[in-house]
Amino acid sequence: MIPIVPTIRAGVFAPILRWVSDHGLPVETFLRDAALGDSIAEDLEGFAPIMNGVEMLRLLGRAEGADVFCRIGATTDFSEVGAIGRIARSRRTPRGALLAVADFMPRHSTHEVFAVHDVPGGIRVIDKWTLAFDAEAQHFVHQYVAALVHSICAACSQQRPLFSRVEIVPHPTAGVDHLARWFGRVEAASEPRLVIDIPTRVADARADSVVYDDDRLLRGQPVVLSEVDFIASLRWTIQALMGAGAVSIKDVARAVNVTPRTLQRRLAEAGVPFSDLLDETRRDIALHLLGSSRLSIAEVAERLGYTNASALSRAVRRWTGQSPRHLRAQAHSDRGCKEKKIAIGGAER
Image (cartoon, rainbow, N blue to C red; front, top):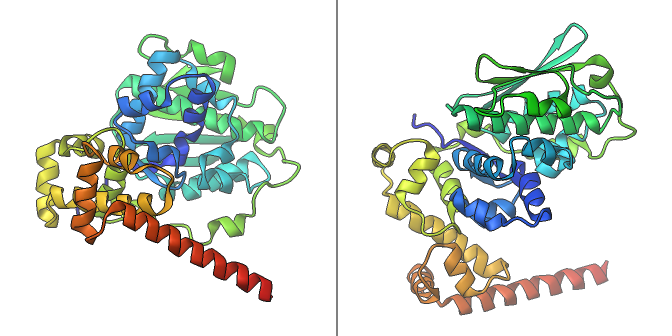
C-alpha cells in the first residue's frame, strides 16, 4: 500500500495566520515562502501538507522570535482551529477536552500521535510525530502544540501556573529558558516528543458552560486520514499548493517528503501520470472558483498557476467546451433560480 501524504487540517494554522495579519505582517509572503496557497486560509476543514506547514512555522519563528508561538497561543481560543477545536470546546473540563482531542487526532492529522494519561496528581499529555524534523522545527512545532494546550486549560481555569512541568526539544540557540515565563517549569527533552504535566486542579476545572454541541459535531466526520487513498491525498496537496505559483512535481515531492523520482515511481505504480493529476485537480478547483467565488478570471488563473487568463480560458474550453465567462454566468443564473425557489417555498409554508 502506498502511504498517504503527510497531511493535517488547515484550521490548525488559522491562529497563526490571524496573528500574522493582526500584527501587520505579510500573510501571503509567509504562505508563499512555504510554497502554500491561499486556500489553507479559506477552508478550516480542508487539508494542508504538514512539511510545508512546518516550514511556515520555521520561517515565522526565525522572523519573530523563539517564543512567537507562545505569544500566538496567548491570543487563541482553541475553537478557532476548526473541527478539532470545536469538539474540544464541547467538553466542560481540560481533561475532557484533551481526551476529545486525542480521540479526534486520527481524523485531524496523519502523522501526529497525541495521548493523555492519568498520573499521580493530574494528567500527562504526550505529543510526538512519526516524521523526522530537525531540532529547530521540532521545537517550534511542539511549542505551538503546548501553546494550544495552554489555551484549552486557560478557558477553564484562572489558577496559574496551568502546567506543573513541560519537557520539550530545545531550540538550537535559545534552548528552553525563553518558555519559562509562559509555561513555568520547562526541561529539555532527551527525545523528540513533547510532555506536559497538568495538575488535577487545572485538569478538572469546570467551564461555566460548553460552547458547542458535541453530538452534532461528531456526526458525519471523515474517516481516519491514514486510510485515505494516496491519490486523493495528492489532490489535497496540490490544491493546498495552488496559489503559490505553478505547481511542479518537485513541489509536491517536497510536501510528500520524498524525492521527485520516488514520487514518480509511486505515481507509476498507481497508474496516474503527474500531468493528468495536476490537470484534473486544476479543473476541479477552476470550476469551483468560477462558479462560487468573487475572484476575477485573471485571479483564478493566477491561483491555479497559469501564466495569464487566456491560458485558463483555453484550459476551460478543453475541459467543458465553454468559456469561463459563460460558466460563471450559468452558475450565477442557476444559483438565482435556486434561491428564488427557496423563497417561494418558504412563502408557501
